[in-house]
Length: 160
Image 1 (cartoon, rainbow, N blue to C red):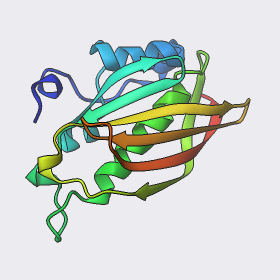
Image 2: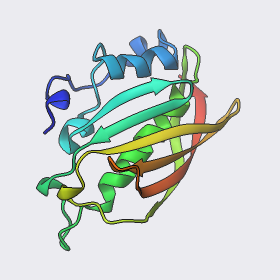
Image 3: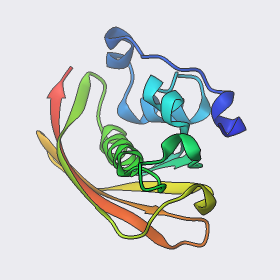
């Protein structure tokens, strides 16, 4: 597991505490470590590394714990990274007392990811944020900037 992930804490933020924070405050707390990352981040070894202006980056270094039977990284890792970065990008646009959840997402895997790929970055960017629905797009790239996977999401926005 990358050292920047090992230094983070994991868990959940209580609903009452979440309601007291804007989405921007919440997501920035994940980045700077003042809030715990969700436990799936520990399981899969990823970190929320950047957050600004409706854009969130989630990073991971795939290893042999992420492999599918064919010996490449399971597509579920890419799906989780994209779901996380796109959903958090929308979340960071929300006011206090407002939450979001994924309604649907679609991804396309365009290059194999292997442990030899090294660190990958999933970048989510808000496309549109309305009162009840938000959409975002995401892409996963390697350290050479090559596209590995991309996707889109639609999230439901609600009073929390």
